[in-house]
Amino acid sequence: MFNVGKPLVVAWRSAGGATPRGQVEPLAELLLALNRAPLADGGLAACLRRALAPDDFPSPHATRAHKHHFITALLKEKNSKRRILETVQEFSLVCRGLIDTDYARQTIASKQLVA
Image 1 (cartoon, rainbow, N blue to C red):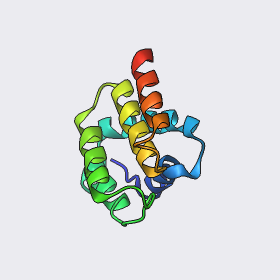
Image 2: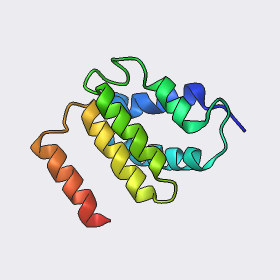
Image 3: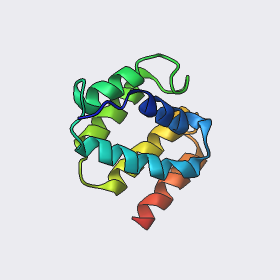
Image 4: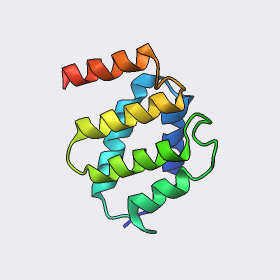
């Protein structure tokens, strides 16, 4: 068992816009591995809730509803890297304030065509 604490906070900053959008895929791989691993302190669900609890973290665009949807979708998937990647990309678009834009629709549609 291990605790993910601070590394997970750094990962959320990445999804929230601190790094280029191309860095989202490695985050999805990390989350898939963490979702499969036995974690201390209540597991990945507890870590996610603690990390995403502050209102303006990782971005002021991410509401509590967005965060809840993200956590639920992420914890539901333990096998498909593609589904986790889609979930992380959608959350990243939310955090960047791009979710209801043409860019977001094109990005999501292009990922679905590739998969």
